[in-house]
Image (cartoon, rainbow, N blue to C red; front, side):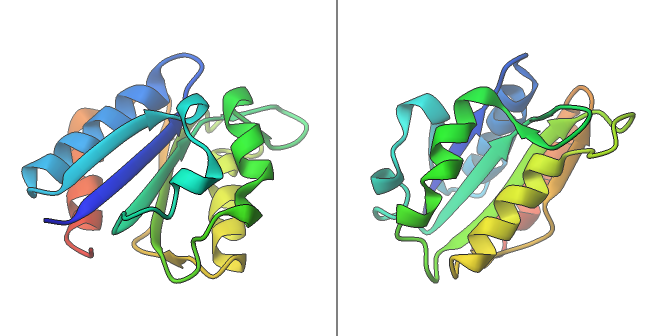
Length: 146
C-alpha cells in the first residue's frame, strides 16, 4: 500500500478542510494517509517512508506573497528536507481578488522543484471556500499518479 503525508497550514480552516478532502480522495484509492498540521511536522519527517508528500498552504498579503503564518518556518527550512526525487504536490486556498492569487502554492512548488523533488500533476488553487467535489477530484487524479 502506498503511503502519503499531507501537510497543511490553515488560519481560517479552509486549507485544513481542503487537506481533509484530499485525504478522503487518497483513502478512496486505498492509499495510507497521514494528515498533519504544519506545526506538528519537522523537515526530518518529510522524506521518511512516504511515496508522496502534499503541501497545503493558504496565501495572504496584498503587496507581496505571504505564506500562512504557521507554514513559514517549514518553508524556510525546506532545503534541509530529503525530498530529492520524492513525489510532491501542492494545493492551497486564496482570494482571486488579490494580485498574488495562491502565490504561496507557486512559491512552495518552485522551491520543491529547485530541490529536485518531482512535482506530479498541476497544483490546485482554490478560490475562497473549498468545494469538496473539486478537491476530491483533484486528489484522485494525483493519487492515480503515485
